[in-house]
Image (tube, rainbow, N blue to C red):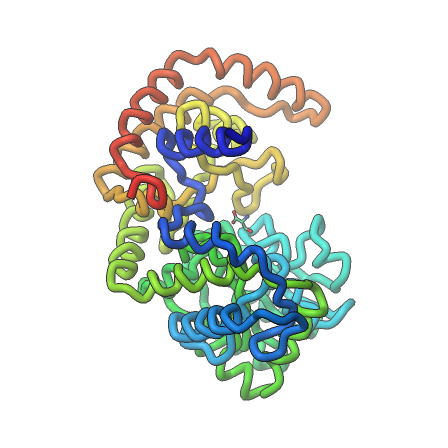
Length: 429
Ligand code: DSN
């Protein structure tokens, strides 16, 4: 047997025995896996349906057109581009088309819950564009007054509205008023909440924005991939907008589309149109609310951000590590107005989409939050050294110490016993 196939088996066991609280992860169905692992990966299809640079695309055209139709049906948009390899390339195509190289773009800071591609200093989007960043107020919500004033001063060509670590509903209408007042394009990056919008449990930006970008593998429960959707509003402003962005995707940024990925996105979109998906989306919200309540946070979406400053200084990394030892995966994250860095932040980010896909309900969230609280007690007093040069050695010693922690081992046994009771979609059902 191939070494890789054996390692995949090992990861199936890991997925079965652990609890995934990473809010951007999920489980796909057997049919999504089937399409993703299909012979469509053998094909080259540079171009778009009806205008390919290679022969043999008769069936691929049907699949891509079907995928576009499904995307427009699910999100009530008017033009769909389903070829971007993932979210970051989708965002790059939109930036290059709407702002142009060097153009000014206003986006939410990574430290305030925005995305890397919305202009973070470590991202190409701050090197290739003039990135201006807005943040959040002390209460953690977006500072709309700051957005308004930055828009007025810098006159961006494009404004991002969309987040990766933000537990609140966004004021799409407020953003639209600001964008309209300076004649800027407004783009919603709905990667995190796309499934909630599709399931009708979260407001849709479609009326307010010109363009929507999304990944397809988070709450949408599809394969890894990206989509760009153009709204009526966007097409009214420029009837050629879809064609222009399409051209930036291919040949501008990409070569041949991943046809197996397109097919798997179409399968996921078919599943989203079934009534069972609405039920799923509702349960995601209910579960996140329980997690937030139990852990002292707030959630209006699928996501909960927990500020660990009440347990000590710079505990995000330590918490992520200890939780992983206990069989609970989530990721460390900065929290608004904190002094730490993205590598050594003060918070953890979690969410309910993956657990909900395994069939867990509110009472299960209470139990899981109980384990999380016990783990967090174990990391109290393991504050990060204030001196940067001491941090690496500190983490080395911390990891050795934690790997021997009996309490974490005991929780892991309970977690495994519990997790195994819930089937892993795509594998067990
Ligand atoms: N990495 C994704 C997330 O976890 O939110 C965003 O791209």
